[in-house]
Length: 169
Image: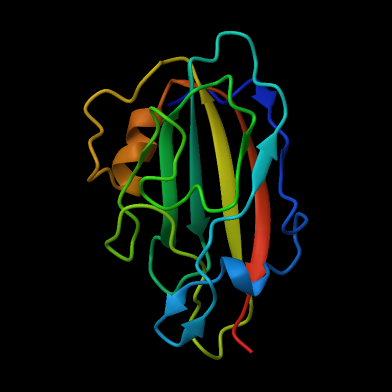
């Protein structure tokens, strides 16, 4: 059993508010979706003392799979960073020292929402984790969501979630 985090981070975006519909520029461009596939601008509250790195994930728990669908993982973020600019989700545009994991589209970096036609709007959870380790040792660029969640065990000092919604028109 893991110890729950002792603090909460506040995660926000200038692109949408918690629980609101995400704008088209953040939506995937493919599979029938026609967005710009740009990751949102994000900012967060001060991390707790002892934070040595940050991890950000984007996960759709409503995807019609047994485990949801992961759209983005960014890890080994410097804890001195308090925001990400729009577009930081593309490989090569992330902050220095940070790395993207493998999303469920089979790509490295951010790929936006694209729920199946006819589904009610899905929830997209952007979750930021403050960790007590400086790097996820051995993560590599093929890091999957399942492996990341395993690697976070026992190292999360705080976390916060911002939820966007999106459904096809």
